[in-house]
Image 1 (cartoon, rainbow, N blue to C red):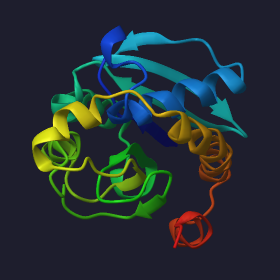
Image 2 (cartoon, helix red, strand yellow):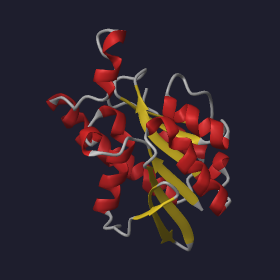
Image 3 (cartoon, one colour):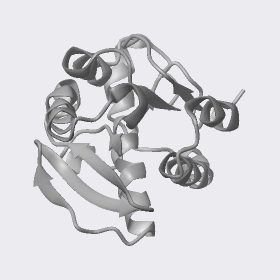
Image 4 (spheres, helix red, strand yellow):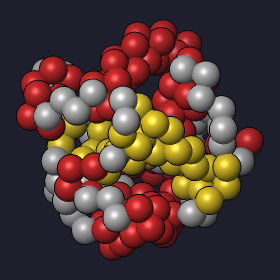
Length: 188
């Protein structure tokens, strides 16, 4: 069993913003693979699929970023998912350059409110797939930056990243170990 979550905020005004990178990658992956049986369950857009006899769930919490853990916690408890090995969360990271990918087995929130919320509902041990979005010029522009739209250069990088993220999701579904995933996808 695997639960693959993309973090973001619901609503048109947030749709193609840096903070919604998790939603963007999940949406594109589902579209590419013609998976479209989306339902509203567990305070989220939720899809259950079967892959080689295994259940694979995709989730986009509709609770807004800062309360993502509520939705994820509901699904984790209902399906008895082991967060340490079966919960994968894709989200934005301002401390990494744009387009960089880093997978971690656990850790702290590092200031990310969505991750803080997940930790409060399922604990620190879950697999994080961080996608670098870079930083604004100054801290007082942080909110505008994370909720801002992509630049033309960033859109080009996103197109390349899309292939890596799709391959990563496929490898997760194919039971690649976390260590091998980290060796393959963590960019230097």
